Image 1 (tube, rainbow, N blue to C red):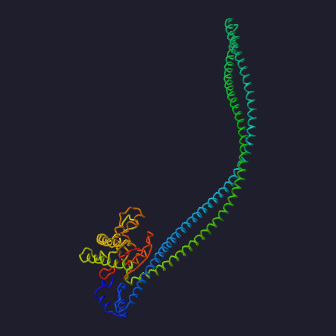
Image 2: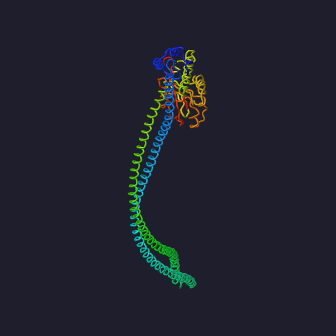
Image 3: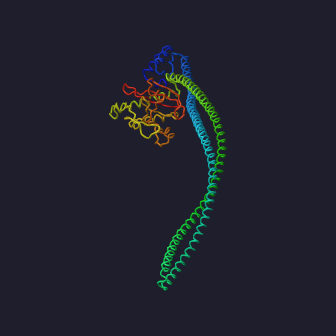
Length: 512
């Protein structure tokens, strides 16, 4: 801006200030101070040199402060990133060590459980040993009993065989008696016939012969009964003989089985005794393992505490460095804010002029909408941010969102196109809500977080310290250098937006 472009009142005032003091007084009354104007002729060449020197000082300071601020902003971003990484790593290490400690504790509990089971097994094995010893003894005793029973059975078998032979003799004798009775009966019958032939003289003999015949028949019947009984006894003796033989065989098998059982019980007792020795060794070894594991667990606890302490110290140091870097960044930004008090031919001054013009366009559009009824005051100052479902990063909607998108976004895009060094021109309300970002950052949602984070930044709340700092600033300008959430280092000049007599928000212009 040169003297020819100044308003008439300012040109006249500059022309009337014909001496250096009056001209300097005139400059100091301006906000911002326009260092582009030439000194009146009456001030002499020294005043032009002074203005040139001040301009050079302001521009050099601004340029150097820009470089320093960029470097500090990068360091600040990396310090914050390092702090976050340290916190994540510390958390991950603590969780890993904690998980290892828990696994070790479970391992110890498992060993103790196995140790208890080994102790129970040892007690059970001792009981089994006693039972096996007793079983072997009882099996041996049973073998002796089977031996005695076998001997008794053999003796009984011999007696039964002898009795069978005696009954066989009885049967033979009975058969002889039966034969004699039959012959006697036949003889008596013949005698009775002869006596009847003799007549009266043979009557007495006939009576005797008849009695003899009756006795023979009776004897024959008795002998037949005895024979039947003897046959039944014989059959019974045969059955008893067979049963006794089978019993004797079973006694022999039982004796063999009892002998084998005794041997098996003895083997079991020996094996259980050997196993008991192994269990004792395992029990003792498990005790050593428990002690070792508990010692290691104590070391893990100490290691976890050490790691946590070290991590906390690292995080605290990182946060302290980040805070100190932020303070340095704030100090460097103070130089920028001082530079906004002057108008030169520098890039910062050009940004200020474009930002002023953009604010006038946007404030004019808002006031016109209120005046025409296209937008109500309640709708414009709506702070009920309704979340848009299914969006990540989270988006919000208000009653003025669609108006900003349709009427203000074109103004933002037009001013963004004024310079290739501009990165965005963005209107936000006092809470950092950006209803509509530049079209370049308002692409369709893809559902991919990383893509949408950079590609669709409309309808989001930028309520981080930088965003709220710009949104709630009421000074003429706020110049900030910072790293965006995408990692890009930005220079940003913002200016408040007022609607009527109320502070509504700000316009943020980022440039490099």
